[in-house]
Amino acid sequence: MADKTKKKDLHNILKDGFSWKTIGEYRIPYIMRIVYGKHFKYVATRMAEYEVLEKYIINIHSYVYTSCTLVIAYAITESEAKLLNDINKEHYGNGKEFHLLAGKDYIVGLEDLHNFYLIDLCYKKLERNNHSGFEGICFFIGIDSNAHFCVPYYTQNGQKYLALFYFEGDTENLMQRAVQLENWDLDYLKFCWKIQGVKAKFFAIDSCSVVSFEDIKNLYPP
Image (cartoon, rainbow, N blue to C red; front, side, top):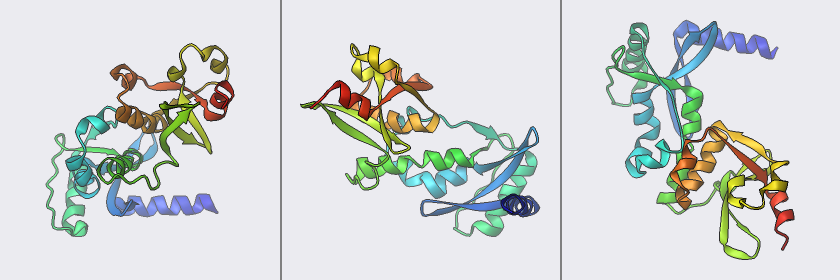
């Protein structure tokens, strides 16, 4: 039944050429592109910047999110430009006029945009000094009795994970229990590194060995 509903939903999207997605408090249109027989959802970058990301781009220095994340953009085709311009003219209705040009304007994956919305956490943390909803995903945690030894963590499946490189000299036992953090999971951790001033070389990595906080507590008993 679920598969039939999914196919029906996809058919309706393809029939109209686009659909809508709510990200945070914003509603933004997305289009479909077929790549090697698979359907992918994309959002025009200019619409995303205006509708979803504008206040963050204005208030947060670009190095915060450009060094922590990598989002790949693709040039739009003639037919995609026409569709996106029609969406703007007929459906957007927010008073912002876009005229998108094939080969000069871009789209990004809807999933990437949704994940990129992690800068909402950055905004709340850096601009409002508001930790609400932040600690549950990523933040800092004190290690042993040294109040100055605070390490960023990322929560995955209810477990807090910390980068292994923070524990140089104690890694022999930890290496056996380490797992790899990648993609957007790693980007959340990179944001905390940026706040803490971690060396730039670590922002170029695509994966990071991490260990659970439970394993760290065994290494540094109270």
